[in-house]
Length: 336
Image (tube, rainbow, N blue to C red; front, side, top):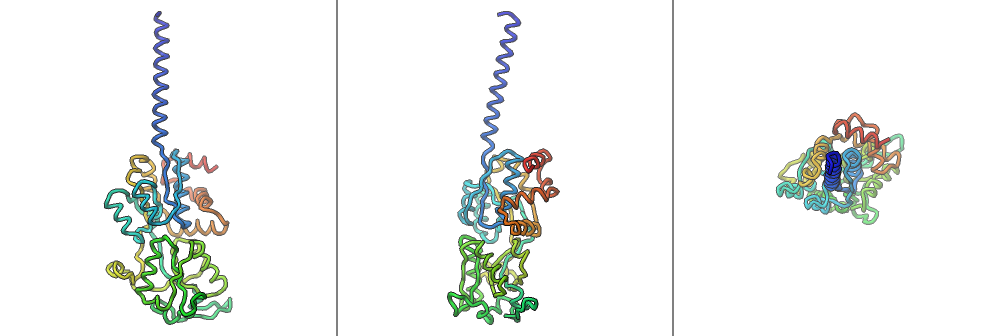
């Protein structure tokens, strides 16, 4: 073989080797970019956060994403097993034992708060206490200030299906807080005066409150912030004894403590997607911002995907600080 032919042959071999290596690396890279699964619990704010983070992870980092529907216990168990990867909105204290178990066993990692200024508790429409002169509504329970006043006014909230008691609107099946509210009713002695009514869905719970306010009718039950409904309706929280850890751990006969709404991930995710972990560590919002997103969705009848896109298009100054410039550029290109 002549020298020139030998050099050509070597070049072909080297070029083929480069292609082989490149192809192998590409296959390895694609294999490494596994689908990232989000715990898609049944309330709007967590679903919006899932889709904000999911859009950034998919279009900015090149991963596939998926949203796993379910409720508290099943999804947190899936997170610990590795059947899902990300919990964007934990409400940790409502299911403290599950999170403690995962942290102790090293199956989940706490990446810090999504938002810090949350609230949850029992409340009534303000006109129930103060009336509404413009609507011709007189005060129905003028002395109602705390949960301990509810026995005096149970008839105001009469349950149409069980008229010997008032109706308390609890949260929905599958949520950790539902059992807590049931325990509170008993601890305050209110189970003698109120039925423990459990709506079938978040939409049914919100709808019951909205309908009552619209019609000028009494309503008492549980809700939380951030939520579009508390950003739109004039509601008054009922006082409870201050949070006390010992009381909480026994009877629950005290106010909800400020809850940690954190982002948790399965412990294997840092090894699969370290750049996603860095992004999620920087991800942080506020209750006011969440209320704004959710109110926009309500006004436009939007889905969580719509709320996520609205946020990404209108709050660029916030989310671009969570990711490198090149990732932000890819996300912005996808938004167009």
